[in-house]
Length: 331
Picture 1 (spheres, one colour):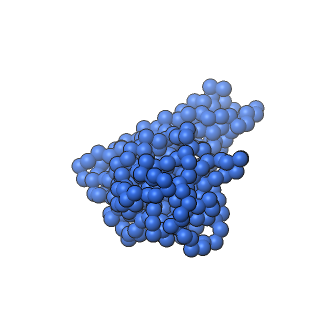
Picture 2 (picture 1 turned 180 degrees about the vertical axis):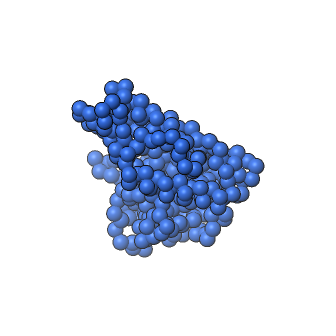
Picture 3 (picture 1 turned 60 degrees about the horizontal axis):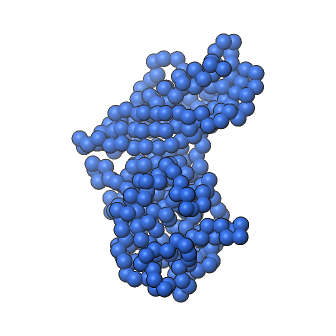
């Protein structure tokens, strides 16, 4: 048993080094998955270029690995799931930055005589997969006269009438930093919950609920009612939130801007990995690097102060399209 655990330990150390050291490996590897090794080489080259384009220098990476479960354990072969808690330090413009992330992998290990080798590595990339297929968009009446949903009421909503209130950007950021790697127990937990998390952040910043009772309109959340999902697509689905922010003219609304440099704290970025119009991931701006570029928090793959373009993500492709939303200063 100690044999395969020792191989996992060696792999974690090598993985940790590869995230900031893009040179040729000097020591032998415990990985025999050729497909992974080839893709890893390409990824290291891309990350090297990525840091250079950002004029940033990776300093070190700290990775803690947690064995989530043993999926299968047969004689001479075992399949396991690992969770990686990563902290990456890098320098830009004389300032030191820190990014945190949690990722998961599934590994297959096989014993060859007295040694164990990793023969297959699968990266979980949940942010590539939208949790719902959206219905076709129809222009909605965002000025619904229905009252706000209960019990999640903003204090500024009294008697169903929204007072003009400022978007509290710092509150949205504080919420994003508090819950980036955890789930607020007051809300339902989704397997793919990036947009659910962003909506919670916006709500924490004072964005008013617009309850229409229809999933395809408004921006609202009630949890599970009589065992059925009771929230709008705009609350929980990246494509739904993209539609809402693009078309909404009251309540939660935003201005589409052209460049990430135009964003402020508490603003939102939505990602279409394949460039086909189907948006799959959402993040919120929580900080800026020394060059003024946004750093974001996200769920699904929990991330804190991650560089906005996600070029280090396994979900990213050359066709990736971004939508930059500057949330209104007043609701």
